[in-house]
Length: 184
Image 1 (cartoon, rainbow, N blue to C red):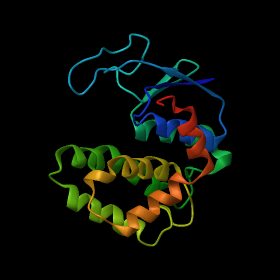
Image 2 (spheres, rainbow, N blue to C red):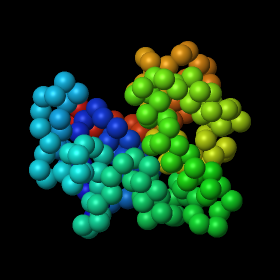
Image 3 (cartoon, rainbow, N blue to C red):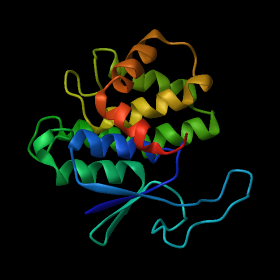
């Protein structure tokens, strides 16, 4: 059984979304984390080395960081085809954009230094649409789509991104994730 270590209204919610898309068996364990203002405390039950979310435990196998969790889950549940498997022509693209998310996309938004450059690269990849892998919805869209939805106030106005976010957040699994998020 997969346990998702979660805090409402955080990036951990995207993994309720992904787990719902995968129709995977899971439980959600709400944990406390430190807040941006320094208040709060990391939950000792949370296996993430920095006490952050998301993190999962799959019968004792701990995985943290969004790209790693997405890769782990899509490899574990291949029947739903939300991540290309080894040998699939889109596997390299999938892995590259998962790594890009953690290594470039998120840090760029944190620093805002490279935001325009990063947005241009992602938008170029997304332009042929409707998803980052073309016609195929994948865990990449769970990660990027939810990030765009959360970061909308920081982003320049873009019809391409707005329409992409709508395609992602109108999926039934996203609605189930929001309902299960517990953040009121």
